[in-house]
Image 1 (cartoon, rainbow, N blue to C red):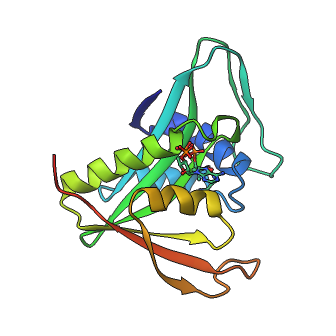
Image 2: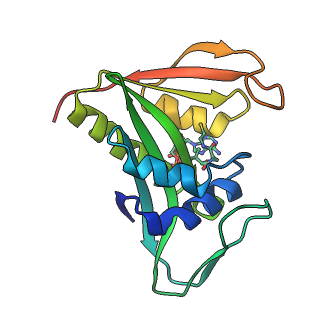
Length: 172
Ligand SMILES: CC(C)(COP(=O)(O)OP(=O)(O)OC[C@H]1O[C@@H](n2cnc3c(N)ncnc32)[C@H](O)[C@@H]1OP(=O)(O)O)[C@@H](O)C(=O)NCCC(=O)NCCS
């Protein structure tokens, strides 16, 4: 698996993966393109050389086309976005294609975000996660995230958001 900075060409696959991973309101292509232009936004993708053809076509009505990778191609399988917000980091987005869950992709993406945060001198990383999203919370806890608070009924289905933060270690 390789982690590299996201490019404009990755955006259709990234959005398809967001939708396939269950993110109900994936960012639009314009929103991702905007992120790629912002100096305070850092977006990465995880990719593999796929041994078999892959087809990403979310059932959600998306404003991007479906994505096909032939066998042997470099295929995007996940992404993460880190914001540098006034000296603190924020994980704004993280998703891995469900076919590749529990294979260390999310951990590798989060590790990359932590390295960048340390390089930027950020002291903390913040995020919010759905109360029902135990998989993501477990991943975040393994990076030292602790629950800081809640936003009741934050999501459109009435679900609470859990606010989490972690200290960035400054060791090299
Ligand atoms: C959360 C998500 C990014 C994790 O990606 P992943 O590549 O499967 O994660 P990893 O394989 O790197 O898992 C790392 C650790 O996270 C925890 N974890 C991941 N998925 C889990 C699950 N379903 N249940 C419990 N713990 C889980 C485990 O501690 C795991 O370590 P282990 O496999 O050695 O036990 C992925 O499930 C996803 O895309 N979910 C939908 C989108 C989402 O929830 N994004 C976060 C929004 S805040």
